[in-house]
Image (tube, rainbow, N blue to C red):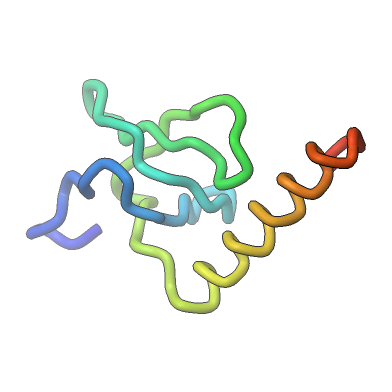
Length: 80
């Protein structure tokens, strides 16, 4: 994030560049940004130095991941 955006707002779609993982900002705890995967699941702590807003392409990827997860859930399948 830029110096003006040290703490991205809750709900912002970002990418943790340390692991190329998309996630929604869930909060801020100590020096970390807490992120949740776009398809749901366990939150993880990310170093703010490795967090940036998602690009349009990454937002499209997030939508595709959520749709896959919802389809798998509704059909009783396993998402993975």
